[in-house]
Structure formats: C-alpha cells, structure tokens
Length: 189
Image 1 (cartoon, rainbow, N blue to C red):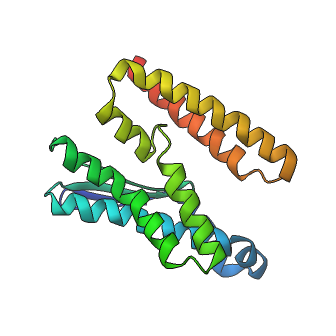
Image 2: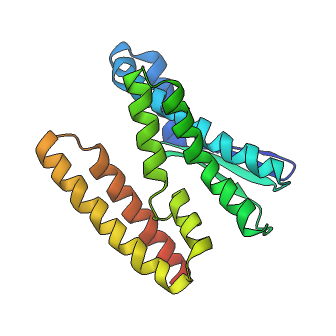
Image 3: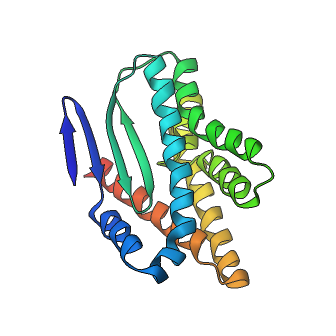
C-alpha cells in the first residue's frame, strides 16, 4: 500500500499488512508476534529520531517504508556538511541507546534497544553504520570493510543458530546478503 502526499511517500509492504491483520484475528498468532511488534515500535522510534534530526537541518523526508524486516526513511539527496549528515545517521542508534538507558530495569526493552543500537552501527548496507562509514572513508575501502562484516555476521549467525536453535540472526544475515546483492546488481546493471 502506497500513500502519496505532496512530495512524501508512505509505503507499507503488503506482507506486513497481512501479518498485522493476522495479529488481530488469531490469539495464537498474537502471542507469537507480540515481542516482534514491541521490537517494531523501537525500530519506528529509531526512524523517527532520524526524521527529527533531518527536519532540524531542513532536510526533506521523501519516503518512509514499513516492511516485515523493519522501517526505512529516505531523505532528499541535498548534501549537508559532514557533521550534520553524521548527526542524522547517528540519531537512530543514539535513540535506541537512550531508550535502553531509560528502561535499564526492563530487561526486554534494554536488550532489544541495545541490540538495535549496536546492529545499526554495523558498516553494512543499508544500516546506519554503512552511511556513517561512507562519509568517513574513501569509497573503494567501503566495499572491502562491508564484505568482511557481512561474512562475519553470516558465520556468527550460523553458529548462534546451531547453538541456540534461534534463527533470527541467520534470517537477518540472509536478508542483508540479499539486499546487498540486489543493490550491487543495480549498480552493475
């Protein structure tokens, strides 16, 4: 579903809409998805921090997309000075760390926000860490660093899956690999 208003686009992935509807229809699904949607609220909070800081610097928000894998804000291409750009990219992870500190006595909230803050600082496309790294490092080194991190994440996710039977990080790593492959194919094609 896509909603357009002036120069702003709000998009919700159809699969997410189906999951949302099933959440309200089935008690079993509701129990299963409750922690997912709690996490999703923190992801939206993260994206709203990017929006707030971007708005402070008069950077236009072109699109907000909600998908099953998370949320993403697209800003205009207008370049700001490096410091302001870095503040915009750091705003999301910092918001998660702030929530973790505020709710340090609520284990689930603390754990999820700490994880989201650290995860988003990884220098892997499309995460904030990639954008931060691309502002600080020459472009030919970005691909090498990102590839090293991608393989590390993938190997760690396999080990965690084998040891804990929790597929979450493995699914995430496959998702990141696919996004990077599609982005690389788009640059070459």
